[in-house]
Image (cartoon, rainbow, N blue to C red; front, side):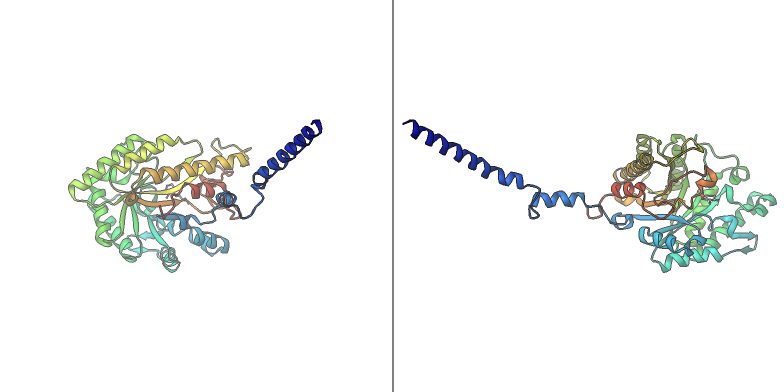
Length: 376
Ligand code: XIL
């Protein structure tokens, strides 16, 4: 009896042993089978997204360039592989173009338009009227309002019609307002005209007449963070619409930094979206060396912080604006090797999507991750 009982006990424990063993096999094998569908999903999720930002985006991705950089092979390859629109960083401004009342320098201007056209990129014209770029001969002449407008009309007409149909969009005016919404007193139109806004309205019309297909923008900095400036822009847009002057879009420069508050950007952008116009993030770069410190180190943590801020800004752009108002995002340069901020801010500054050796930064990954999939 006892023997039988013992045999029974042994059989039972063997059965339990093998039974549990059999049950465990599939569990233990999770993670070792290549065919397991759950594992594949996991692996797919972990695949890096190798798309270029221009491939993923449903709107144009621009970069500001200088013609001299386009002959650098790595620069040109990086530009062409990742961007599908260019803005001229300098060479389409008034000073480099307008030599005298009767002479224009077209070489670099033409080169940039040809480059864009032959590389299947769009070109955004930056910028017709900016107080910083009136040539010295023009400033010194002290024209009265009638002479001033005759010359400016001629300038706009000549420049915009030169490559009619090839320059898809123009910043007609740049930075005419202070952050509190008053007009800049160092603006020439301010001192020359009793009603400077009406003068600008006519300038938009001169640009429209010169190339009816070009989209026309008002461009400024701090647009989404200065409510006074936004109010002034919205009032100008309403006035243009009431009085029949053309305007298609607003450009917000977006020279911000890793600390710029996202809710402020989001609220400001929503406010601008209410105009119903296109919105162009026209000069995006994000400073990291916010204290202009000589000891600044662009550490892995700082790179990630910058990447996160790029992602947040792109996500805000995607989520706040209706698709038909998304004109695109343009970064103010391509590589940290060449950025205006090393001259205008601090020599230790790393604001763009590619490092000085043309490697994609966390900033690039963040930008890419912030974009909606085009198929959505
Ligand atoms: C800057 C360029 O990056 C510099 O190379 C140039 O010397 C000065 O202008 N807002 C604008 C841009 O609208 O045109 C400015 O570009 C940056 C600030």
